[in-house]
Image 1 (cartoon, one colour):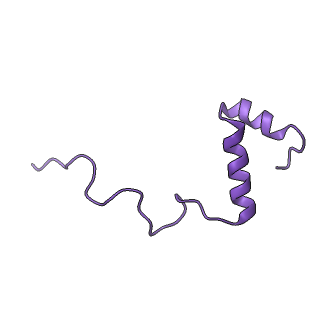
Image 2 (cartoon, helix red, strand yellow; image 1 turned 120 degrees about the horizontal axis):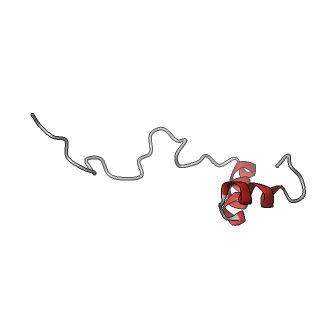
Image 3 (cartoon, helix red, strand yellow; image 1 turned 45 degrees about the horizontal axis):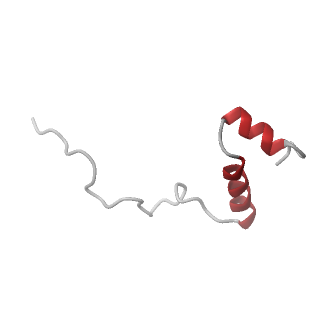
Length: 56
């Protein structure tokens, strides 16, 4: 946001991601919404998923 005009283009080319992704992230920050990753008690998947641990 501090890069000003053309900043989204510069960042998207440097990180090789879509400018729309950057715009959505900026909008999320401006709205004050918390990211799904940053919330501590919410899970994306059910517990117990993934590979089972090996028992010796």
